[in-house]
Structures are given as C-alpha cells and as structure tokens.
Image (cartoon, rainbow, N blue to C red):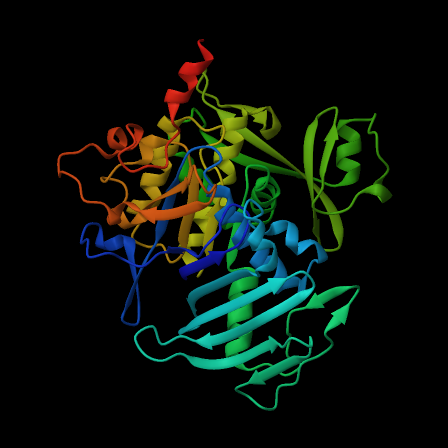
Length: 425
C-alpha cells in the first residue's frame, strides 16, 4: 500500500511536494482505512484541480519512477523532465521518495537523478515512528565514482553503464527486503491513463470466468441499459466459415491482438497452444424480452471507458494493489461515475487502493469521501509551480457545501473564470 510520495524538480513541481494517504484525526468512514500494524492508511484519494494545475504531473512522477525501477536505467534526456521555468533548477537533481507497505514491512525508496548521473539511491526499512533501517545506499562523488553501501555485505553491484544509460543498482544477490520492495514498485502500482485499459479489459473477459461473472454482477447494480456480457470463442476455421472474405492469413495472427473482420472485432488469446478468436458481445434489454447482442466496439466511448474500470475493482478486491487513474471522468457521465465510486468506497472487502485525478466536482462529497481523501492540485500564478494539499488542511463551517465552496474558489485549485471576461464573448 502506498503511504506517501515526495517529489521535487519534476515537470511542473519545483520545491518538494508531498502526497500521502495517511489519515487525519477525522473519524468518518472507518472502513475507508486500512490498518498496517499501528499505521492507518487510506484506501483512496481523489485529486481535483483546473486544467494545467499539475494533476497529471503527479501521475507522471509515479509512472517515471516505476519505469526506472523496472528497466533499471535512467534515460539520457532526464533534464527535460525537470522544472524548467526556473533556470536555477537546471543544475539541481530530480528527487523522488516513496514510502509504502508490503509483505509485512514498511519501505522508503529514494532516488536523485541528474543528466547521466544517479546522485543518490537508497532503500530503507521504515520504522515510521522509529529510526529507519538502511537496506542499501549508493551515491556519487564529484569525480563520478560510485560508492555503494549495502546492509548485506554479500550483495555486489553489477554493471553500471549500458547503451549510454546509467543503470539503477540491481543486486546480483538480493535480500528478501529488496525483492519485496522491487516487486511492489514494479508490479503493484498500476497506472491507467485515458488511452489505456482497453486491452486489460479484453484479456480479463476472455481468460477469466471469475472476472466475467464479477463483471455481470457489477453490471446488474448499474443503470447502464446492459443486461450482461458474454464471450464467444472461435478457432480460425470457425471464423473462416462465418466470413469467407477474411483479410488476414492465420500465420500473421498473434495473441493479445484486436482483429477487425467484416463480422466485427475479435480479440486473440492462446489456449493449449492454439490461437483463439474471442468476440465480446454486450447484450441490451429489448421490448421482446430477449436481450439483443452488440459487438463491444459498437458501444459508446463512455460505456467502453466505464467497463475498462472493471478490472481495477476486481484487482483491488484481493490484491495489495495501488491503482492510479488519470482523468477518471473522461467520457463518463458524472451521474454514472459517482455510483461506481460509491460502490467501491462502500465495499468493506477491498484490500487495495484507488487514486485518481478528476474534473468532476460532483465527487466533492463528504458523504462519499473523507476530508483526507480529497486532494487539490494548484499552480502558483507567479512561480508556475504545482502544489498539492488535502481538504483536511482547511477549516470551514460544518454546513458548507464542499462542491459549491470549491467552485467559488474557497480551496483554490479551480480555474479563474474572471479572465475570460477580457475575451468579450
């Protein structure tokens, strides 16, 4: 589970900005809180802000950190990722520090990078309320020599340079702590942007009967004029019998591909060494009582986008997973999105976390989210730098409508519409 993330000199973020899922003294919605030993960690966070405020910067920081850890390298063009509005930052490193809980342990992983240089990298077992225990640390002096210190002296660092990219330290013999920490950073943070998630949905529907059943149960609770989803499976000969004018030979087909035909779109999987063509049918109620099936590709963009979130909620039920969604409201009507979020937030059986950015102010509802689960991103008009802060930092009347207060600028992080008056529309 994610505990906190600290960022500096990255994209629209200048000085250190901290985003965290630690609880405030608020006592509402106790089922929104996970207990990791003696630490309370929130199950969700919603980040609001105007266009250009820097909401996506936070998501990009998660994404870059994960890519660096998974690939073991820092790209040469890292200076382009810095906060370039202030020229002084050109000579300062990018800094990320992330704290998380996994495998019964608290970890802090930090890294400072500059053009072609890893200034510092470290992993600690965090005590939160006591001293951290160093697992490994590496640093670089002015002569660009690498000095690595590991808590486990048997661990040796492998090669440092490869294809003109500086490698992040990967130990040839890893401790259980290093393995657990790297596994969480690499696999248990799942990022979904407005352009991703479709293939994950297709793959789950085609390969997991459990997920298909879960999806149909979830559909039954939503007012989206869909009765159920089914998956029809064909081999190449079956498909050829349905459409004698197929535009592709069998040898060109690989698994996990979307294949268009005159009869609709198919998604390929491999079963028992054989390519299978899966057609996903979405059934709608009809006045004749028999549901009518449509190809998934025929559904509206909003319905397809909504269905793409189903694997998210499925994963969060049984995995120590932190799902991070950028622009969760894109293409989805607020009247439909809010019940979906309500369903997740009200579910007492979840084990994962959900973090999302949004412009949908209807989600600013203290009957849906706790104060400490609501975050704002705001960009300073003078410095151009992004700052992030939670609603729990504010004092306001108990009877204040949070959505109305936000739209009137009470909490910042909202577009200044007064500037549009100069356009004289």
